[in-house]
Amino acid sequence: LEVPDLVPLLSWLFLRGKCRHCKVPVPARYFIVEVITGGLWALVWYQHLVVGWDVPRALCFFAMVSALVAATFIDLRWFIIPDQLNAFLLFAGLAFNGALLAMGRPEAWTWGMPSAVVGALVGTFSIWIITLLGRLIFQKDAMGHGDIKLMRGIGACLFPMGVLTTFAMAIVLGALIGIVQVLLARRQSEPEDEEGSEDQIDTPESIGSIFKSGLGYALAFDVVGLFVPKFYKSWFGEDPYSTEDADDDWQPGFTTIPFGPYLALGAILAAAPAAA
Image (cartoon, rainbow, N blue to C red; front, side, top):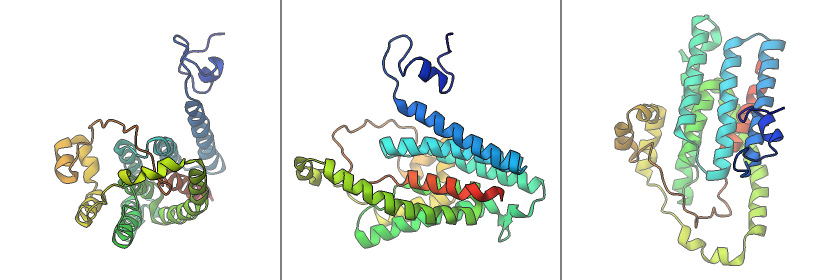
């Protein structure tokens, strides 16, 4: 029995983790991503299409968990979260809110505004304020901008209370698991790495840039910029589609921990009781 090359899970297993033609190993993370995504889809299906019946929420959560799994593995590997994924999350939340409005459901509104819009603003501000305070107090970059945009998309999908729950869970998870990560990184690092760490210190972002970027994210200028790259470049000072060469010499410091995975896990946990 010959299994096609692109069948989730089965292709990797039957081909024993190698390309059928050139026999180059296919990283196990692709199989892991498929397992996790499939498991989360099954959970969403059970919660919202078996225990309860909420098709708009199920469709939104299918999209949300898929994007969060992808964002998690990308952030763990490259310390970035693509703008396209963050925009996809925002659109998923807005579409979900639009469906609730069409159905006349009361949860579509919060404080007189669409709940997805309020959730997106709350999510944006929750991470942006940490970015600002970290820069003011510690004179260093405390959060990546991808985290701000990721939290905006989570807020659009989970609405204000859901994104606040996500934020609280992510802080707790980040504190507990992050300490373990830092300790492991210290043990695995060699003494000569510490000597060269001074050359890798980056200049922190300016306060003005933090305020301008925060306003741009709150107004979704980065999403508009994906369709109009010149606008993105004029506001954020970079091309959203530029390809940057990976710096093979750069190594994350002891305290450089991607926060996106904690936000993703917090969002999944916050979404879990939504069927109740």
